[in-house]
Length: 272
Image (cartoon, rainbow, N blue to C red; front, top):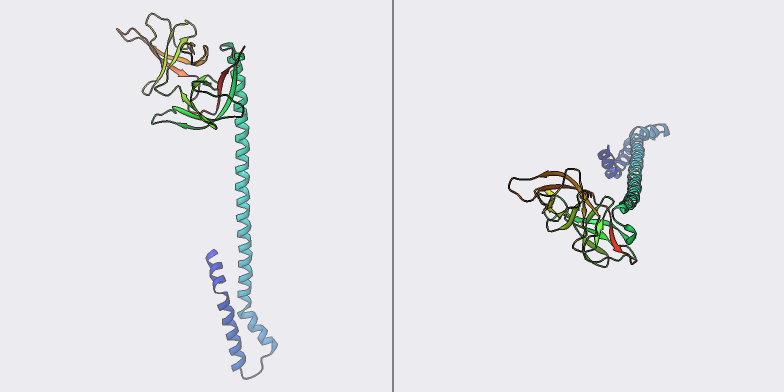
């Protein structure tokens, strides 16, 4: 129908001119006066159908424009609804993070730390399956610095690697160059947590004489001066002792979900 509307609009003047010429020829060569009835019939039979067609096409054009406007309004409403829902979800994440962090106060005396929130604006994978770095937006009044520990609502995420006026870059535990001094919560025995691209998060240098089992919680030990003691790193999901090896092979499921980083908090010590 759109092609017909366009065709008629393009040649509308030609149609009208042709009708005028035909009507004029009838008047000239008829040889006698044409009665009003005859002229009315000629006008009705030749011009009126085109006039009706034009009116019909104009109505269709108006309906099409109205449909376009309605579709635009519908799209705008859908976007506004989606943004509103995402805002509510983001607010819930922030509240949930604060609640879970307060419960972690049983392990880490959070009263000794101020939490500076930062929303993740981007992540970098550097060729790995999991992100190895995250960029967070700074908020007014925060105090961020290099090697500052960063957590989310579930546990330790990493440390601040660099800081600018507007952003901070966080080195995540999933960076193969990251190292965290750790201990097993039940036995208090220690090792080093690192990330191996082929195996995931592992606890290395855990002696065969030590005590460890699946389900144990792995915490930061506080050694090294970067991470305070007691931050949850993850849970032991596999333990094996290869023959002749002085160390256990220990796989750890991280507490933080590195595939869904959103609300992060940097820990700033508070003077007593």
